[in-house]
Length: 252
Figure 1 (cartoon, rainbow, N blue to C red):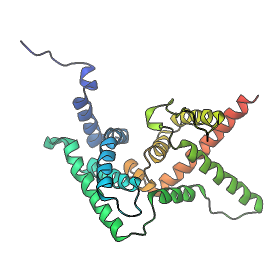
Figure 2: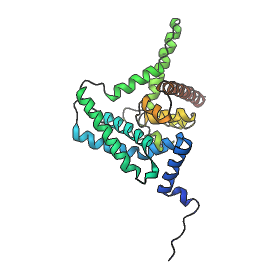
Figure 3: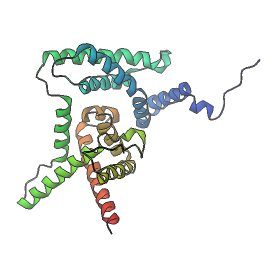
């Protein structure tokens, strides 16, 4: 019996064919959307490999997120260096690159036992992104401080909201430390992220949901870390204004 010929949408929705089209567009057109799609497609593999290395090594003063960062860097390197024409599955190619990068990073952590944790590095990046070095009267300094506090508060709300899962992914499970109003505001914030300009939305998703540092997002989007920092600040400022406008409308 002759096999049924695959045509139409089936060519797109079948995973192997869909992924092949992503690689073709990435290599031929340098399509950044395909780059992020491929990263998101294999970020679970990177996390799983990171977890295996973490529980095997348990380096003093290390955190699981440190190992995930090494895994993400390895995944980005694999995406850059993979040749789809060789016929090797990307997962097999990426697994070696990810494991190798984790091993190198873990060795460096052992040598630098006093290294600052990933969490502290991320917080410092956020603060540097939000602080604007400018002189002026005390009123300007107060406004800058207020803007910094608001930006950090928005970042706190964005964490753990499941941005990569869609608009309604905010965690609505009861939490004695969160009010109903806080959770509703989180949901509004997640919906507003979808409306951000493309690169700003990618930065917010990858930084707050996947925990990527600005340097890694810069590699993902092929931008400078300084530009990523600027876009991060612009995105939070845009979100702050939109959430403020929504709150004013709700209280009328």
